[in-house]
Amino acid sequence: MASVDYPDPVRRLVAQLKQLPGIGPKSAERIAVWLIQSGAETSLPLAESLIAAAREVTECRTCGFFATEEDGCAICEGEHREGQLLCIVEQPTDILPLERSGAFRGHYHSLRGRISPLDNIGPEDLRIGELVKRIDEGDFVEIILALSSDVEGEATCHYLAELLGGLAPLRVSRLAQGLPAGGGLNNADELTLLRALQGRVGV
Amino acid sequence: MASVDYPDPVRRLVAQLKQLPGIGPKSAERIAVWLIQSGAETSLPLAESLIAAAREVTECRTCGFFATEEDGCAICEGEHREGQLLCIVEQPTDILPLERSGAFRGHYHSLRGRISPLDNIGPEDLRIGELVKRIDEGDFVEIILALSSDVEGEATCHYLAELLGGLAPLRVSRLAQGLPAGGGLNNADELTLLRALQGRVGV
Image (cartoon, rainbow over all chains, first blue to last red; front, side, top):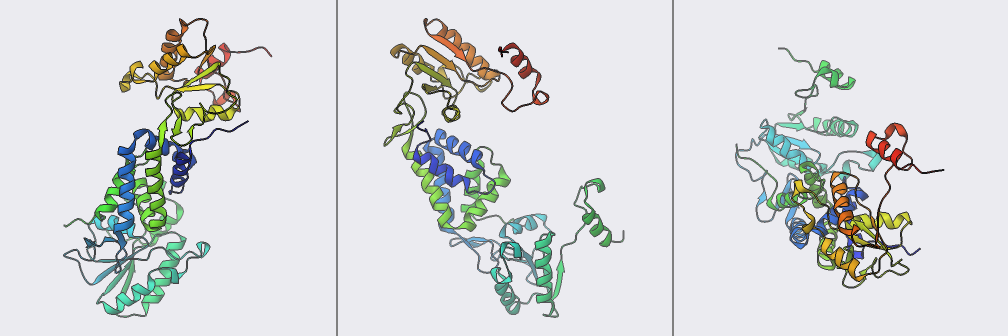
């Protein structure tokens, strides 16, 4: 039996969409069909945004946040930054949530990942050389490790604590672990409860 | 406090992605960041597929399936079609699953939707005029209504059965309802069981 399939341009679009994170074959097909049925007035602006983002958005050479040639980096060139604090994050996308918390107004440094032997990612694949150079040349007094509390985040944390610990009088700290805000005890796993107990504070 | 946000091109890309079906604000941000970090070699082919699909893919004027100027319609111009059977579907995307079942080799007609008063979609918004013209001019002996078995699909089914019922000696049929293949009784809802009992067949 001769098999019938979508025309080539539809299949190519589905194949491209399927690569995106969190998009499976079914979603890719649904999105492709929706885009084709919505017509050029929907597809072309999306295509233009993709091209503009690919052309204009770069990584800030200092902190690793997204920057553009035109506007520079909103973090490094922002006003009222506390120059003596440096917060280390895994990804540039971790910066905005910390900014929005309103609790930190220092500088940031994105590592562009974390140490993960299973994925063949070692310290040399991260922006750690840039970090050491930046600390050497800057006048930071405290480095805050704001990394994930999973295995890879912990490993990266230990590596950095050891690496930066020698650079006295630099203080190295990390985010507190404990109950998430609004979370009840019955929803917390054992490790979270252990950490919350270990890190208990006076009232 | 001055608020920090992503650069404009990133925010525009997120806004465009957020429009896609099944993509919420969090997924849109995740996909945008992934695309930017993957670089131009990922974003530009996706942009090109979007532009190609928007430019090249059209709706077949006869059946409503996707077609291209270059290759025409794979359904209407396909070989070994049974010319006397016409299967009516809601969307062009319903055609391939029916083809893949291998149980039907006739022609198709996509309505481009179904009657849905809540969404302000009436018969005049669907490809029903084209359908009547096609039946008038063709030599079909059976019309198979392959519509959804939900409220809107049923309403569309009734409307079409009434409209086409007068065109004797045309036979109008619809898909059987009953237990899905591989489905146990305990997973079937009451309406499905009712339909399965009503439609029972001799063994």
